[in-house]
Image (cartoon, rainbow over all chains, first blue to last red; front, side, top):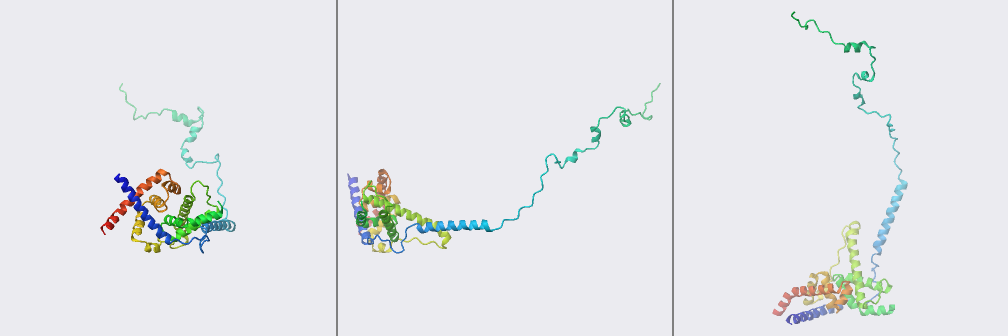
Length: 134
Length: 175
């Protein structure tokens, strides 16, 4: 009960304070006049015009730049790329080991003295021959 | 409703509309006048269309609130974005109306200061209910919020305002 009373008392107090505020504001309110004041313009129009004008100028400048500025000289033709069949690896020479030709050819039996010499067992030197005691 | 009717209604509601515009513009008089003019133009040119879903006063207050919001946003954009490019120093935000501030009594000055301390929504609801004598439902229509939300803002705003004004009221009693 007390709470409700206090609530209404507060509301009345607020209402009277706000009413006083309203009277003060009304005393300083401008006269009702629908014609826009001098210098008052439709809000936003100037900003929009400015943005559109800026966009137009930028577009025109870009177009002029593209049309008028000469293009750079064309690049010299690049070296022709070697075909895959002609290509050789730079480390190919490492595969050419000494004596590789021997492995590539098929030897004929008896045709070469060198091979038979190489295959023949060496004769033992007389110094190394063991003396067999009879 | 014809345009002549609108003209008459706008004239009848002019003082209240100005009070609301002042509130929406944070008590900056010049700005409030511009907002009011822009809102009247919207109404008379038919940009803002009254459909009769609420009272004319509620609808007009809604238009004023919307216009003030648009103007605030536009000013903010101008200051933040274009201000850096076109001006070395951004235009200062006009201060509160010094004439009104000087002429106000001590009590109303205290109330203005207290209202400035409230959150925006709470202040708006209190203004619409106590200053403009609208119901909470009408206030909710103006602010485009639900009735429950408006009630919550109203109660919280009152409690907060009471707390802010209580020490001052105590001082007045002592005097």
